[in-house]
Image (cartoon, rainbow, N blue to C red; front, side, top):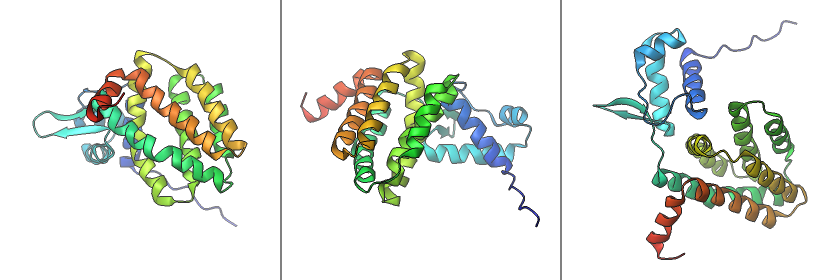
Length: 222
């Protein structure tokens, strides 16, 4: 019996993943211009897959396409951070709560946490952290909720990359991850959701304190 050959990723997908990796690991920084001809030469492809990859990345919010300025990596500021993390604060703890309540397996989250602890570089740890969070919300039982959170994953990772470059906080976040998982594995849905909410909220407050003050000014509350 012959084995089924593994599909070869398209050139567009190859370029897309390559550019995304460079952005989320800080090799391409916010505001940096993305020139089609340069990227095509770097990836050994024509400009067409580069152009298509950039359009897709614009759709996910990682790059900005401007008629006059061309394509640039999206800038990260307090307003952008607050918008992205507001969505996470509203949806992610609830998704985790539902996953715990329905007794979903969290083996993937445990595995991602181990990979993060054993990571030897920033890129590897960042990817593992992203997978940890996704493994918490994906088994919530509501595919639409999972897809909505997936849509902000890349933007959240861009915010994190900028914050980590300025002030690394890996150890603190790793400890918070372990506590979230401990509560979830113990079946404490409410406790795990509260811990996750505090984890997400405290990160953006530390990294972008002006985002918190802006939010307070909007609703008049401390």
